[in-house]
Length: 197
Image (cartoon, rainbow, N blue to C red; front, side):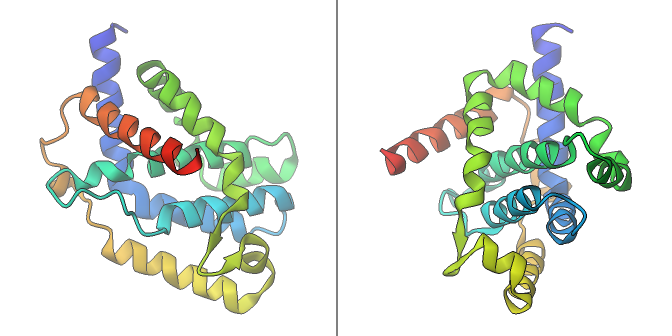
């Protein structure tokens, strides 16, 4: 695949991921509630949920708002790849439940890595940090062990899905170049680096 073909494929993948984000979020909720999965993987699922549904202070208030969800789409998949990639029977069963999601995942992430380079490595390095997130004053442990907190997180996810501003019509033909996505991710990385400096 040529460089231009790879970039076109990357744009197509990101467009699909942006549209499907609320649906894909449900898979994280399934992982968080699956008591057969390792505790660490369930914690990672909750962290990825929190990362996705947290208010997006980086939205720019213009027609490219949908691009501010690109890193969420990638982080969600990197987290789910780790969760479902464990070498045990329970992870295999979980993968099987969502085979349509997991079957193309490695190939799609490989395309992202080729196009994104160091930006992909940066996002991948953030996955383990997701376990340390808090949301509305509660830790990940609380969201796993307290039924009331778990219900709150579920309701927050429903609210996110209801208000999510991206669909095929929103994107339309606005997303044509890989550089458009890369510029947004570069800006997110700079903002992240400033906050954590």
